[in-house]
Amino acid sequence: MAKLCISWQEKLADDKGLPKVVEITDRMSKRWGTGTVVIPAPREVDEIMRKVPRGKLITVNQIRSLLAQRHGATIGCPITTGIFLNIAAKAAEEAAAEGKKDITPYWRTLKSDGSLNEKYPGGVEAQAARLREEGHTIEPGRGKKPPKVKDFERSLVKG
Image (cartoon, rainbow, N blue to C red; front, top):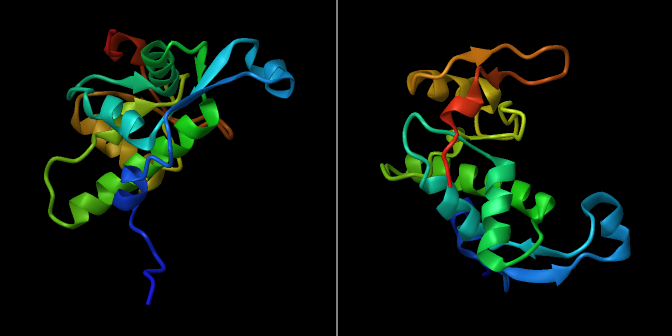
């Protein structure tokens, strides 16, 4: 019988023929401008997230920029990059639940404005707790806006 449910770690490992660089079409250009967009492989997003050391942070836009540079594209795809951030986070938690210690520190990846990601395992509360543990100050969210890391720009990785 076929396996019905694949793990997050298996989803992370499945490159599905990616990465690939494609021309930005007319429909996409209204949002993204002209040029090319790289659709990354899930493992590439995870690999960048893994390199963020304790006490440092990275934003999704920084990840997209790094991917675009790596592949000579104009931009990194915001949609697939966001999906792969979440797969990497869920794969990390799955690995931790299996007793693995070397997991992707996904909680160090923030939205472009420094806010926390409600889609990560445990929501913003779990991400905030891990970030506080690493010395960051979390500002409460306002209205529908999620909490964010105070002065997050000071802790961003360079490069």
